Structure formats: structure tokens, C-alpha cells
Length: 405
Ligand code: PMP
Image (tube, rainbow, N blue to C red; front, side, top):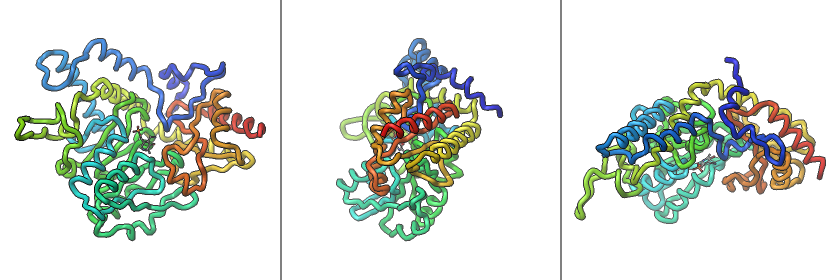
């Protein structure tokens, strides 16, 4: 296909604004992406024309809003090829999805001394929820290490499993290194020990086709705002056999079948995990974002972003004193670097003055920073609307800043 990035950019008005009188070069997409007009229009339109609380409403508007909300669930199901909409739980984002699973799973299945396996490159949101359970229930966290190129060391993984291992929770793609982890292999090993696996798809779902059934993960979580959808909405996919066995995470309206002071009967899936009024405007927005991605095609997006990533690594690689973190052959749309002893914050601040938005710091992955022996990196991350010219602007900016020190 002829990937018409200039036409795509017109769908995102914010991309044509300036900052400090310079054209905005937005390379902070791993933190959040910009939103296309079709998403913004659809949400505005729902507020203007179809806003009413969903479920159980007898009136027309409520039914219309419910239809949009439940249609969004089907759009998400199809996006990740889940077997049923009962397996799609709406949450506030990846973080809430992981907290839900950590809390409910540990409550149902973990005793003091039981173990969860994560990797060294997890986002804090896949570490801290397990630490909360460690403090509460005395569970232990084990860590899959990585090599110096940023690949998880899968050779010894089998040895990490004991009869106390109850779950594996692992990032699909590192938000710092861009490494695409071999989750299928890890899932196969875990399943051979009868251990379920949660995959953190925050940095994979926006970038390449995910098929939860062929991957055979037990849980898959991601955020709407990192894939052109609104903030405040995320997804937890779980196999029905697991979700059915987990206790509710929060209590309230929407998630009950009947309530008396003596006894509450919980709703069936997926509502058992959706207490309170859902963000039904955001689910509609997320569905529109998924449709937008579908129109461009995830394979085309993946190819475009791969080209940008490879080009960026090559171009930055030519700069004196640069260190590029994450040199895996399986790498997604993230480039992390440091130049000489220039502090990441200085580099980021000076790039910002050139109109270039990157992220600096530990990227919510401090254990990974410890592993790398650094405090933070400068991170450029790509989305479907970025261009080679923007990579050139970044590389030029990094050279200019480097000369200043
Ligand atoms: N996991 C990964 C790999 C991430 O990159 C992020 C966001 N930076 C999260 C989890 C948390 O996502 P959210 O803040 O949308 O809940």
C-alpha cells in the first residue's frame, strides 16, 4: 500500500500546531498518542445527541447509549480476536486492569510463599500491584533477567518455575527498550507448568496485530489512550474460565444481579468486574480509534513504524558518544538513548526548545534503569503519523544539543 502519511496527519489537527514558534515534532507516543478527528467527533456527537446512562434504562436514549457501549465491546473483541464479548472487561487503563487481576487472582489463588514471575523490564504498573499483594499476602516476586541487547533471557525460564508459581505477568513490548518479548514461548513454558500468563499489551496493541487466542495468553491488558483513543479507558481480556473463577475487584451498581442486606448475587461476565457507571463515552471513542486503525491497517502501521525505528536507530547511531538502549532484533517503535554524559533531562529540555517532544527519565521502569546502571534515558517513540522528516529533526536536534556540551 502507498502509506500516505501526510493525509493521515490531517486527521490529527494538533500535529500542525507550533511550540516556541517551531513546528511540533511529537515523539512521545509511548506515553500517549494524539487523537484523530473521528474519535473526537464521535465522542462529542454522543454527548450532544445520545448521552444517557447505560444499561437497564427503559428510555430511548439510554438504549442508544447502551447499544454504542456494547458495540464497542464487540469492536474490542474483534480487534484482539477474543472468543466472546463476555471476556472483554472495560477498565480505566492498563494499570487498573493489572491491579484487578493481581488483586482478584491473589485473593483467589495465592497463599503466603506462592510466586509470581515478572521480567526485569516491567513498567511499575506490573510490579507495584504484585508488591501490594506481597505485603498483604506474603507472595514472592521472581524476575526474568535480560541480556545486554535488551532481550529477555528465556533459556533459564523453566528453572524459575516451582510448585509455588501461580502466575506469570509480563510486558509484551518494553516501553523503554521497544523489545518485543517472546510471549508465545513464555506462555508455552508457563502452561507446561499449568501456570496462567497475563500479557501487558500497553505497548503492543497500538503497533501490531494481537490475537489473544493464537497467543493463548490467559489475560491481556491495554490502554485506549496509547492507541488514538481517549484517556480513562482500558481493557482487560481474560479467558472466561479464569474470569469466572476470580472474585469481583470492586463492588457497586452494575456488577450485581440482586442485593439484599443478607446476600448479594453478582452479575455474570463481563459486568461482574464493572462496578459503577462505565465511561461509555470513552468506550465509544475507543471503538472509533480501533476502526480508524483498521482503516489504515495494523500491518501497514507496523511496517511504517518499523521503518521509522530502524532509520532512527541508524541515524542516531552515527552521533559521537551516543548509547542506544535496546538493540534487540525484535524491536518496536521505541528508541531510548543517552549522549556522552549529558543528563537526559538537559537533552529533553533543549530538544523541547526546538519543538521536539520526547520523554526523559526512568519511564516508570526503575528496576530496568538499575539493570542498565543508569538513572534515565531520552526516549523517542513513534506512532502511525510520524515521518522520516521528524526523525531527521530529532537527529539534527540531538547533534545540536550535543555540540553545546
Ligand atoms: N505498561 C506499559 C508497558 C506501559 O508502557 C504503560 C504506560 N506507560 C503502562 C503499563 C501503564 O499504562 P496506563 O498508565 O495507561 O495505565
